[in-house]
Length: 65
Image (cartoon, rainbow, N blue to C red; front, side, top):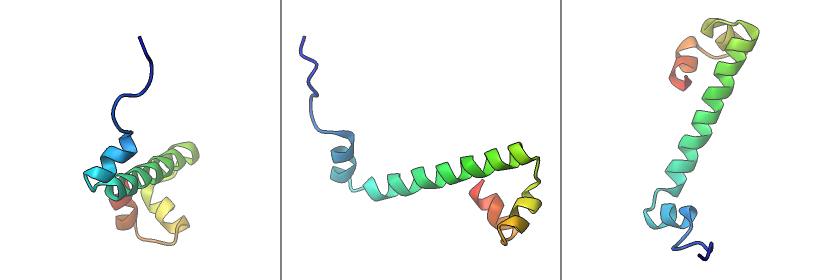
C-alpha cells in the first residue's frame, strides 16, 4: 500500500473553506488561555491576582479563560 497523502492538506482545506484565519485565531486564543490557567495553578493565584499582575480587569481574565 502506498503511504502518499491523498487529497489536499488540512491547511488547503481551511483555505478552501475560507476559515483558515478564524481557526488560527481560535487556536492562539486557546493556547493563551491554557497558559494563563497553568500560571494560576502553578503559582496558586486567584483570577483577581492574575488580573492585577497583568494590569487588567478580572472580567478580562475571565473572558480569556
